[in-house]
Length: 72
Image 1 (cartoon, rainbow, N blue to C red):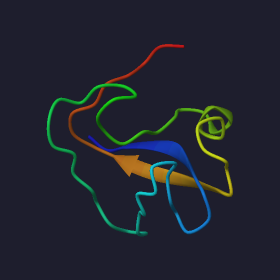
Image 2: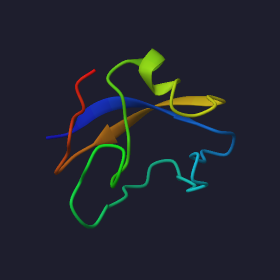
Image 3: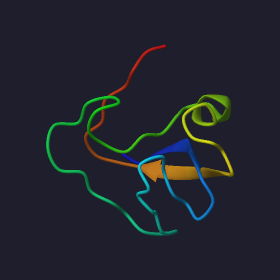
Image 4: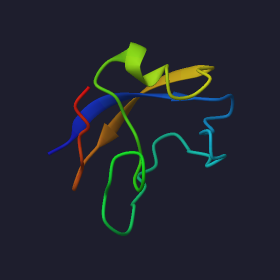
């Protein structure tokens, strides 16, 4: 099942850890998926996504496969 979430980026689609995403490309994460530890992050609400990275770009992203959710 594919789910659509919000993700914020620095300019150039970079994260706080300087990982650079490319548009229209799927990425895979190895290992156990753990919130804020291992995996790619996305948020159900745009305002939540904007609080994680200095938001220069706000994007809708599609995710699928194993995931973990943190309840706030």
